[in-house]
Image 1 (spheres, rainbow, N blue to C red):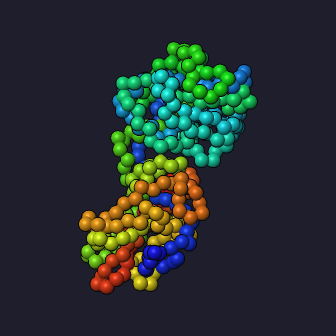
Image 2: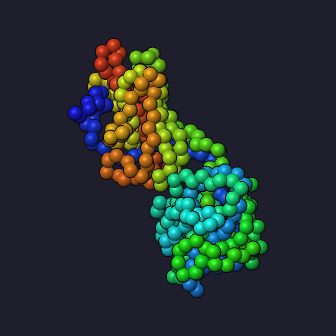
Image 3: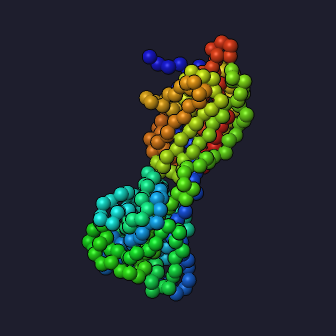
Length: 339
């Protein structure tokens, strides 16, 4: 049976995709300044090889993105000159996460001198060693700094301790051929740590307060997760709603004001609007008068498969109501810009 979304103000299946969001405090595992004139630059003209470094982690931490060094000019600028696969392994060589930093800039985030691709958060256990490494093809013109010869001393996260430089010749894989106590390959790769300990709210509420529903309160929307494109967790939550009514989340890149017929509320997303009404996405307020949804930003409803870095999306929740007869209402809106 087709569900009826009374008072939304448009056909439920006319939608472009989207998403909403939140952010945590994301900190690079290491930072350094490679801009000095005396910096010694390396590449991989000799051969294909995986290059990276081993480190010890002192406490449990969530890794949210993997990155490779992006020098800029005279290397290709902006972005990477070649695709670089990058991965995290444990000390015995089991791959824990992998990403591909593409040629150019698409789908990446530049933080300092490193270009990152988001991964599903990876929890690394403390008091253990790990290896991060990336593949440099012989044809690639992407440079990275030799931290040892350049005399560059990185500042690292308090829980991250350098162990050794690592490499593997000929292919992309666990870099175990040649462990070097000096840091000449440590400038190749980096990773972002969620330093807040847990996801925290992000996004800016707008179009509020909403019109009060039958509870006498205005419905609210909030988001938690990570304001980074690429599939990191995003949770949307609606609260202050009537009990035992069903509802859905909406999203659009355009803000506006619409008073739909058969609704007592105001819709604050306009234009091409996505409805989270696929199987498993329609929610019920139950006895708490609230509902939430874990959103996969890589599989959005409508024609756009994923949210992209640099886009701003606006979110809102719609719900049924009896006030006193059958009607509907909305929460306020939530605007989120993705990195």
